[in-house]
Amino acid sequence: MTYPVILPAVVLEPTTVIRHTENATTSNLTVIDPATGAALATSKTFYLRGDNAADDLCRVIRQTLDSNTNAVNPNTYSCTISRNIDGTALPATVTISRATGASNFTIDWANAATTFDERLLGFRNVSTGSVTTTTGDVSPTGQWVANDIYEFFESEEEVAAFVERARSGVVIGGRRGGPYDVRRLALRFQTEQRTVIKAVPTISSVVDTGRAFAACWARLCTGRPFELHFATISAGTTLAALSSSTRQPCFNGAGTAWHLDADTVESGFRPERLAPGVGLYAWTLRMLGEVP
Image: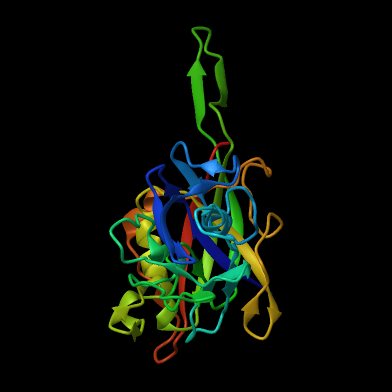
């Protein structure tokens, strides 16, 4: 069985900064572009995948912290993500740890110099304090994890056609572009906590909206592209890691980014309860493949 994981695109700017302290030395670190190994030069899109690819947001964090060479005997770092289908648990947790070195570190998410949005990783707007490892305690807004298998994932073919009549009376027809990659994804929700914002629990006075699909859907409605992955169980309720093989491509594998179509956006988020008194909901997304 496979479970849908949706990763909205995260766009980072060259002005994105993380305030980091190591061995009593504090630095404002500009985020690193893994493709170049240098500070991000232009706006670029990343995904909270955790696969260490060049566009993986976890790798961005790791290499950004590694770039702090101002400290004496600097650490190196790891940044990992774990996903869970337990409807009452966090759908994902991101952990940042010291991989090598001997110094504690601090990431000051609350400092005005930090312009990276810590909510993408599931952290709150506070300093981590002096630690060797830190784990987010709210749901990352950079992804959404289903807690039930999808009902169906079907392809549709749409073609823009034309018909012309010549003076002789002969009718000529043909296609204008296409076919376009259009899919319908039917989701199932086992608990309201993964469905609607009003049902998610409050953690330390923070409403944990990141676990609700309603919050993810609101971000996708702005036209933001997203990746769709189908993940399997690795053990218990923990999902296996995402990779290029779990990503659902479009256009015969040439494209990877999807968008919600206008009908889905305009219909509003109205998941259907399958039966009275049953905590099981369903909703269908109509998705358009992005032309590569």
